[in-house]
Length: 394
Image (cartoon, rainbow, N blue to C red; front, side):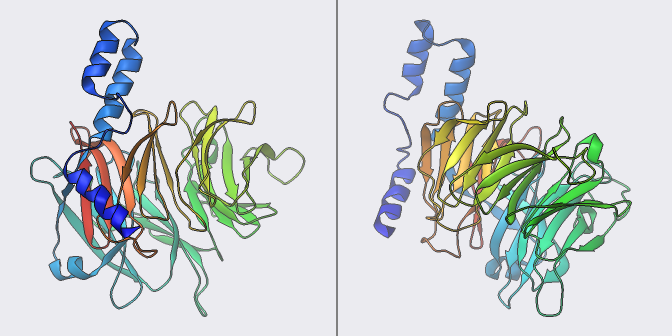
């Protein structure tokens, strides 16, 4: 396994990165000239080609505490909506976790530099789930689900991003609040107008929807632990993935658990770890603990595409779907980052971890065509151990 990783890293350095036979710039141009490709297909394939040829470069992280950067290990990174900030959870040497926000505005070639804004917030509890929350404005807060420990109960905490760095001039510190929620596995923030200022938490055999402003809660009993959640934007639905393999949607207009509150039901053969609703809200993509990634048609409740090669046996691993870029990204339990074509499920790229494979060092990634904001560099960010890497393309 380690020899294979080293071989792939060597090939990366030699830039041998074409995933498909005959998939190169000259063949695309030839097919386009002969009329075999329309403009849309040509642009999509050209983009896939650039993705498959991304080059790895180490990112320099600047911080007010350089010694912490050398010892604290990345647990996860999560990009905001515009991909100009990363929220980070870092495991500290003395035990526990601390949080930070990395500004990506300096992420420009040839010098790749970012700044880490840290905070004194520290927890000795496991972070089960994280998402960006839009309370005062887009991505104004971060929602974290923390496990209970000893006499301290589990909770969902809403942290203002302004505690780390004020991204809006003159911004006052936002609302910092904590909700006692025992054993939350997952969380999601709602941008749906019919569930304004609400977040959901997936618990053991229960879903809890909480209004941050009023404190009002809706509870929905389930037959299994809820490990993944996402609110739809246009329809008043909350999608949930369960340990049993079931995926179901809750109709938020139902004020009780009477008939009809489960709007959609899909089934995987293993525990569902990630659900992603696509832009038109007619399809959903999900991954599970058997390494299966499926694209579902929500109208027919049929699987219409499957993405092969993902490795997972028991880990809680996220799935990243980027329709605009036409790709799907997932990091496997084997520490390999795989990139598929969204449109035909072809594996475009397999990226080995720059560090030896370890269960405790599974990379965390973020992908965007605009890393660092509107004029940012396109590519993939990978955090592993104490390092941050950028796989960029032009």
